[in-house]
Length: 187
Image (tube, rainbow, N blue to C red):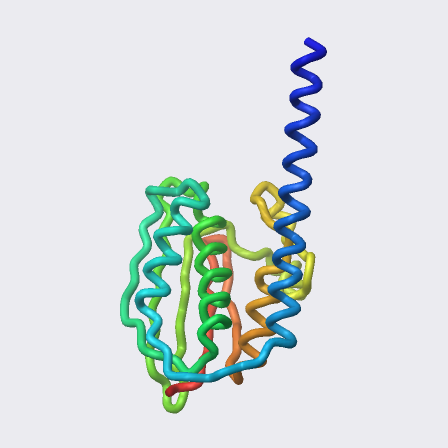
């Protein structure tokens, strides 16, 4: 009995250390998003999106997540920053829809004048109307997201990166899920 309690306590401590390490990593990414040098170039997105999507299904133990990848036009962006943006948005889409009976994520890009717009849509938990004001603020998590692992840094990173590369991030949300709209410069 004492041994089991000690083991549980050790496991709890290890989990907290892992959480702190993850948070420190995310804060470092946020700092890089703010201060690192930017090299804008014409970047293909399809391979990045496919790899991130497959890894997200493994990371969030959601093999039944249906991820539909449609058109993926090239964007004008910094390679590392573009990867970070898609990583955070796709991971969130998979994570927050993973408890659904039929989790579904749709990813599609299209041209709109001198912009490339990507829409990443999920059928997850959605964002409550009364909490939308804190979406891109660091360390803020929605009340309905508390049962999911996370620290509230990812969307702050996305917001900061999109501003730095001359793009934009917006979202639409309801109880049926969330769509993130990423606007990049057209190459």
